[in-house]
Image 1 (cartoon, rainbow, N blue to C red):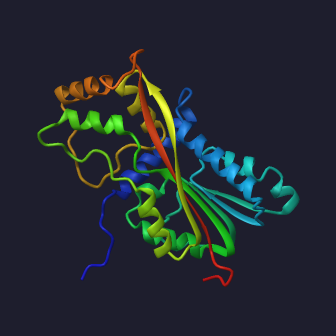
Image 2: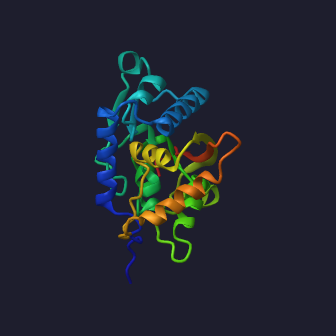
Length: 259
């Protein structure tokens, strides 16, 4: 019996998407990063609220480096905190080091094939009573884009957008992974667009494009035209379309016994 998780996402496409994101963020002219910045600000606010002051912290997926600066502005000098930024750590494998009092994960978890395994590895990398906060786009994201893509191919729609996790499924996964004091919540980030093409460009610049393992042919010119028209049909009085990014937050701890 094959117990391996289903292969929904392509590891090569995930890596390529991440490398493209990093290149666009370095060389692009004012690249989009509002989803990333929203997650950075949210995690920093949560850490300030719980007054969590880690001696050893790991930040995964923060290409800006801003989370460490916001959440631990003087820790490296005053408290001796070990703030380590990791861009490409393999979340589906045991971490090479552990004993972290805090781990923050920005994005990434929504496109791993073995999410239950990744959540277990995160817990095991914590010190006893260590805290994890992980954020990524969840269910309810991009409804206008999904509708437009469906309109492009109404007869035989191809898989072009990956499935997303909702709060209930996330809570069940945290319990299965053995997290202590698990909490799941979400909030919506609204962004307005004048065209489908601008939305797609923003997704690409933020590493939020299609990384599905299935090889889907590109939209035909006619299909793309239908998608653009369907997207604009969702527009408001000024012609602009309000799209939603529903950001899911998972938080929890490792037990005091270190289990």
